[in-house]
Image 1 (cartoon, rainbow, N blue to C red):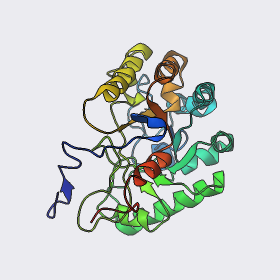
Image 2 (image 1 turned 90 degrees about the vertical axis):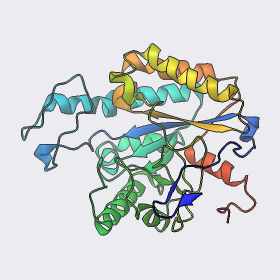
Image 3 (image 1 turned 90 degrees about the horizontal axis):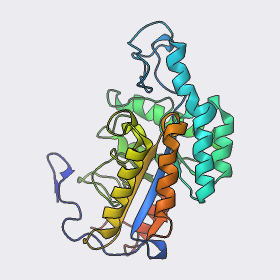
Image 4 (image 1 turned 135 degrees about the vertical axis):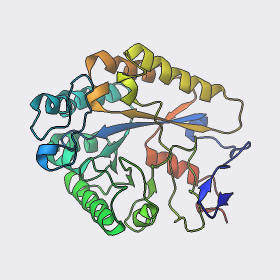
Length: 303
C-alpha cells in the first residue's frame, strides 16, 4: 500500500511475490547493462560545474584546466573496453541493454552501429552524462526529449527506456510515459518489475536496477576480478536457491572503462560461464518487462 503523503510503497509484493516462470522455466532473469558514457562525462573546461572522476586511480581535483590524463581514462572505455565487453557477450551469445548517453554515441558512431548489429537493446541515459534532480520540469523534459531524439538518430531505434544518472524528480515518470518510453529503470527497490507507487503514478512499468552487482565497486569493495566475480556468482546462486516462491531478476551493471580492463574483464566472462546450464534467462530489460506483463490478465496495472 502506498502512503499518499509520500507516494512511497514499503510493502511491494510482500511475503508472497507472484509465482510464475520466466521463458524456459528459468528461475532468474539476468539483465546485463552496458553503460555507454565515455565522452559524455562532465568537464569544467567544457562549462560544467565539476569534473567527473570516473577513473579513481587518477588524482584529479576540480580544476578549470583540462586534465588530458583523466580524460584518457574515460577514453579507454570507448577505444578498447567496450569492444572487449562486446566480444565476451558474443562468446556467450547473450544480449544486453545499453544505457546510452547521446553524446557518447555521437562521438563514436561505431559503438552505436555495433550495439544495433549485435541486437542489444538501446536505452536512454541522458544527452550528456547529465544530472537532473536540480532542473525544473520544463528543462528536464527538454533534455529527455533531446537525448531520445539524438539516440534515435545515432542508432535508427527509439530508446525503450530511460535511466537518470542521479534519480527521478516527482514529475519525471509522467514525462517518460508521454514521450514514448515503455518502462523505466530508476529504482533499486525490488527483485521484480512493478508498476510503481502513488495515486498519480502513470501506467509505466518499473524494472529496478542494482548498485551492488555493479562494476562501479571495482575500485572499492571489489579490488580484483575474482572478488567481483565471486560476488556476482553468490548473488545468482542465492536467487536460484531462495525458498521464496516465484522468480526474480538480477541486474549486472557494466562500464566499459572499468569492466573492459583486462584485469577485470575475466569477472564477466567467468560469471557468464558459471550461469550457463542453470535455470537462468539472459534477457534484455525490455524482454523482462514484457514477460512480466504477460503474467497479468491484461498487461495493465492492477486496480
